[in-house]
Length: 256
Image 1: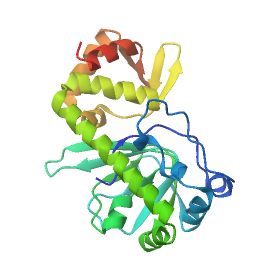
Image 2: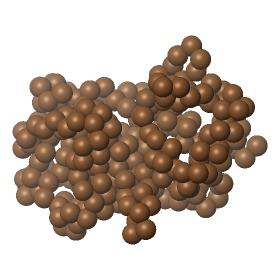
Image 3: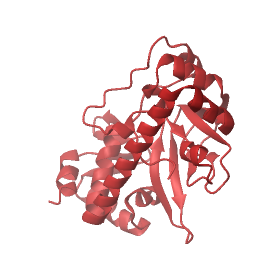
Image 4: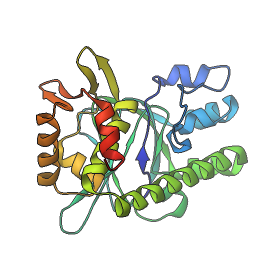
């Protein structure tokens, strides 16, 4: 897949700030988090970042707009400057798996651009998104001119592959209840806002999308969320899902 793994949020990367910054951007604290969560732009030195972004064309997308379509030819890559997207893959039978959430500083479409193969996933805006679009030829030319950028891209792809392998093992070793609990905990760390009653998830993911992330049916996830609500581990409202007792999710994720 072009992109996979859950990413943690970072500060916004407006074009002016990303280009004019005098030094390498410092990503938010990531203690205990996987390397695949470090955005692509944060891996580059100032000179490489400036040269890369100058190749691009700024674009804006509304909520639920599609940035990249699965199976289409690879013509460009995108670097997200602001906002969040979801990366999904649809099977022939209509099942849609959620592979990743990509946000500020992340690159999407890079694997297809390098390999020349059709895109393996769809990237959709969760809210308002600002991005820079770089034509494939210009991107490949930049990688040839700046070997350090190419090495950082290779490192990123390796990190994402390791994270994907880990999740495959978890899917085989853990049940849906454990996988959902671990997913909610991860989202609370990376896309959570602390409130009086707990941590509210800000991703706005539907039950269908949560099911796609843990490899289960929507009905199974709905039943598990109902169970978690009845045990007052999570709460739901118009503002979204709130994790009230994360310690209980940790126990469930650990098989207790």
